[in-house]
Length: 279
Ligand SMILES: [Zn+2]
Image (tube, rainbow, N blue to C red; front, side):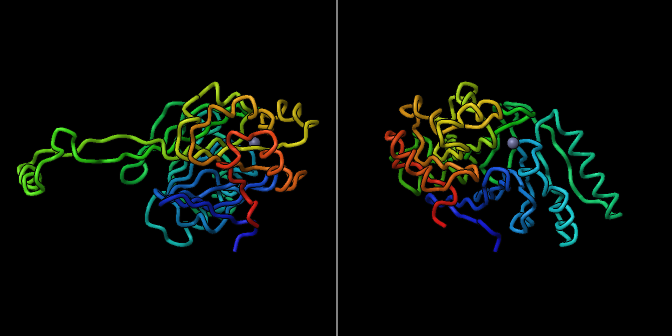
């Protein structure tokens, strides 16, 4: 098993992955079965076709050529789709091209540069939307939208046989709504909430919280990371069912972050999950 592998579950959502600052960060999200970042290339991601990279820092992206190579070796029949921020697409292309040259083989993949607001269909009823984050290099976060279908309101109260008859006549009996199922921020400072306040509304928010000690707040500002104190002023705004804090600095123990959350974020403490804490 991958060292440091953890799992988070909420209803039918399963998130697996590893996240520690400067070590590696990757998540596999099911449904729909996509990866957000690829860390150093865990074998757990070999079966994943859609890889969404938030930025080029190697603790999030080093594993890309390894996964493409591994998928090629496994004879995966679907083209791997790699999504990344538009300004670093050429660098990722060269990175993978170097791996091609070293291995003297080609990988079946396509690189799709994204800008904030771009949307991509990923499996039945799901879309991923890119949003802007705050980091010293080109970066994006990703929203995962889920389309829900239910009986059109004007047809509610009808007998099931009548609905079946309408359906057989080709009438669309459904209405569709969209739910913000999960948001993944990658590495970011707290300005991400100004860029995209929808982060407060999604069902699950995967948010980095790198620093805990008061003395490290300035460091967070310089390097585009979130300090637990940054969340104190905005804690009343979180409507999410679960807030999953990840990317904790190796300077801190999980218990220190938990204690800081209890002390400084009472409005959300009961909904906060700390990635790695259960180990
Ligand atoms: Zn980074």
